[in-house]
Image (cartoon, rainbow, N blue to C red; front, side):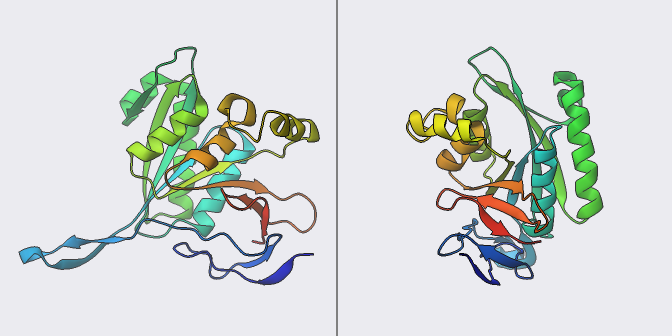
Length: 224
C-alpha cells in the first residue's frame, strides 16, 4: 500500500503536484546551488544564474515524455535546457558537437528531431534558454554521463521504456546492471552520473501520471 499526500522535491518545481509514492520516502532532488551574477564592485547583482537541465532526446515516445515531464515539473525560468542527441557508431572513440551548422552536418535526421524538441521547449517554456548537443560513439551510457559532467549539468532526465519480465531477469542474472550494454544506458546513467539523474516513464492505465526512478528509488508514482 502506498501513501497519499503532497510531496515536494527540493530544488525543483513540484510543489503543486499531488503524489503517491510506493517507497517509504520521496527521493530528494539535490540540484547544484543557484549562483548570482556579480555586480559592480564585486557585489552580487540582482540577476540569478539558473541550472543546466539535460534531457536525452530522440524520436521515441519515451524521450518526448521525459521532455514534457521535465518542462512541467523540473525546469524553472532561469534554467538552461540542454537537448542531447546520442548517435551510436562502431568506433570506440566519442565526439561531441554543438552549434546548428555542425549538428546539421553531423546527422541531418537526428538534428531535425532535436529541432522539433527545441520548438516544444519554446512553446512550453518560452523564457528558458535551449541548447542542442550531439555526441557519437560506441557506448551510449558512458557518453551521456561524460557529456553531462563536461557541461556541468545539475539534472539529467531520460525517458525509460517499460521493461519486460525477461529483461528484468537478465539484469538480475548479470548482477544488477554493472555493464551498460546489458543493463541499459538509462540504468547506467542513473548509477554513474555525477549529477542527479532521473528516468521518467508514463504510467499506463486510468490512473495516469509518471513513474520516476532515481539511484535510490525505483518507480515511485507521481500524479500529474
